[in-house]
Every structure is written in structure tokens, then in C-alpha cells.
Image (tube, rainbow, N blue to C red; front, top):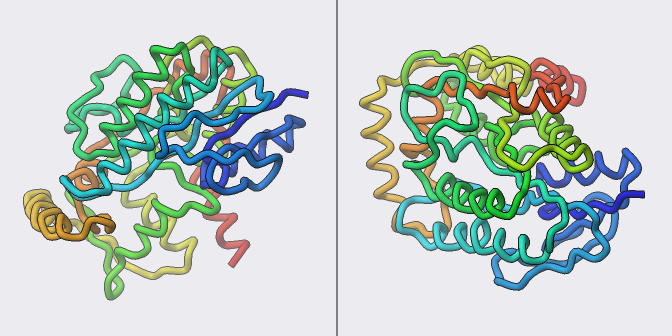
Length: 307
């Protein structure tokens, strides 16, 4: 029986990965501050600078991360770096040569309008928030250590504490305003990311970065309407002119610099991610035998059946 250590197993992505690994017959070590959904708990706080105990793990999947979009210059930015960069360095030391999969993010790619069919060798840098910068720094450490790095985009699914809740919270009086005109976007179902993590960990993928996304991109506005409808939220989708959205983001970010522990409801990063096409080319992962099977329609059907 293979023993897999999953960091951040009490979180959204890590919890799905830990549960799936156990379902497939692995012994799972849940590494983090809180127990995961299965297996044995090994306590580790990624922000302390102390390497975790990985027990008898043969493989490691590193999901532990500080997630969010903090205002520039706040304490939340420093806390994010402590987890996503320094914590990753400690984890790599503890892994001591074990095969390791690092869950990164498509947020590492350079921002801007020219992001159709992004490939792994496309430019990294110029990120608009500390999350993107720290994930880029963390994955650089992982790549240098010979890890497999996975880059999903906008992970969604059952138990998602970030993407869908934020979307639903932005509905005001039956209206949801999105920046700019409709565009095509890649999204990643948590089930597709889970399959990729376990395939990479157990299937001897060559070290390097791999994009991970659903079978095809989505039209942004259609995807948003699908999510709203699945959750029983009746709202019209409107478009906010891009210059106005950017100006609003500047004002909101300045205001939230005074609120160290709260993420701004609107940022330049959020505007960039929603207003420009971001489509991931997953050819490299497919060549390893991985294929995405889950779609946004599957998610919507599951949400409706659970209501």
C-alpha cells in the first residue's frame, strides 16, 4: 500500500485529494494544522518555519497554501509569503528527495490580454497580487528541487470556500456586474485537479510544470449564469466598462490598506482575471495520459440535486 502525505488536507483541494487517495487504496497522512477527512493527522503549521514530520510517506502532494487577494502593503501579504514561500522551502527540506507534486496556480503567468492557449513555457512574472507572486516563488523552489508542478485555474467544486461564494456575494439587487466584455476562460474542477495530482504522484510524471484545466474553456458570462442558476440565484449579468472597473479597484484597494485582515471585494487582480481571456493549453499533461472528465455542467447538476 502506497503512503501519501497530503499537506493542507483540511482545506478544499487537499481534502478532495486526500479522500480520493484513500478511496484508491493509499494510506494517507494529512499534514497540517487540522485533521483531514481521512487517514492519520500529522500536525504542521506552514507559517512557523519548522519542517513537518512526513512520517513514512513515500510520496508528497503539497496543497497547503495561503489563498486570497490581500490589499498591497498589509500584514496579510507578509503572512501569505510565510506560508507559500517559506513554508514550501521547509516542506521541500522535509520531503528529502521523495517524489513531490506541488499545487501551484495559473496566477503565476504574466498578466495582460495575450493569454489565449497559455503553455507552460509562457512568461512568468509581473503578477498583480501577493498570491500570484508567492505561488510563483514557491513553485520556483519546487521546480529547482525536481518536483512536478501543477497549474490549475480558478478551482471550483463541492466545498469551495473562495470562488463561488465570492461570486454569489457580488450579486446586488438582482444584478451582477462583470468587468469588460464577455471573454473565454479556463476553469478547473477540483475533481480534475485531484485526478492530475494522483496521476502525477503515482505515475512518474517527469519533473516540470503542467497546466491543468477542464476539457474546454467556457464563455465567462455563460459560466457565471450556470453557477448562479445552479445555486438558485436569479440575477442578470451586466458589463462594467473596463476603465471604470480599474478605477474602482484602485479606490477599493487604497481603502482596504487600513483593514489588515480583510481582502478587498474588488482588486486589479480580480479585474484582470475576469476581463481578459485566460485559456490553458493542457497538451503537456495529456501526453502523460491524464484527461479532464469533469465539467461545469456536472458541478451545476450536482448542486441542483443537493438543494
